[in-house]
Length: 275
Image (cartoon, rainbow, N blue to C red; front, side, top):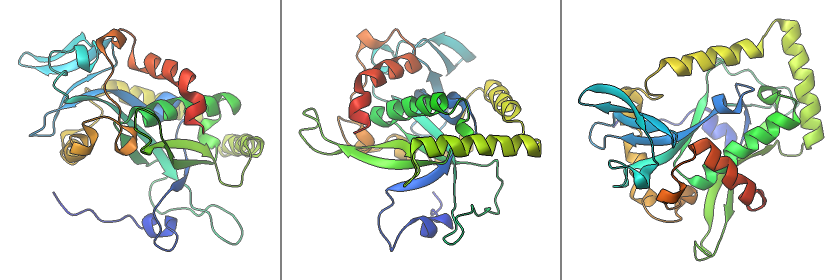
């Protein structure tokens, strides 16, 4: 695998060589499901090619007869997923905000403004927290999610299940030093500026929705080769580990779709996730 090269923003976001604990972000779409994609995924460990992707009800799977739509009972109740190779897999697409130090105006990065960085996770804590936060922010902003200045933040908590060992997960908050009311007001102003400039966010969301529907799998073979090592890492196989890894759901939890299960769990654990 080629050596990874740090992005130019890496040094700008880190402070005096410290660990990166938060990243200022803005989302691309108003629809939370376009910004954050979560499903059960199974990759071929040797080739890195996607084999099966499901939502807890149905899946698309590569078989000897070609691509097929099949029932998805969740990993623990699936004949090919029970071995541990199938996991909940979430991908959050964000744009990184760059604020200049003197006048507070956002610096324009030379890259495509419609491009994005991707945070990938197989941790239940991160998946359910991100899915819930995005819907909260969409609601309070009046469906102006793409206009909000937010922050991707690493959090930690300990539970009896983790034997009081810290579990780390990723959350989304308002920008440091900004209240929710101020963030929403700024989002309203930004949406008005977009309308005056002729930018139609609803059409952008619809274009992305159509694009997702065209692909058999979200990741191409070229992309997944670099993901296999992380996806099958030993740290992610058992219990609470990095990024709040948890044991897979039991067969009793297999019926509802993944998104519905995450929302239900989030309503129970929202206080803990927000702590």
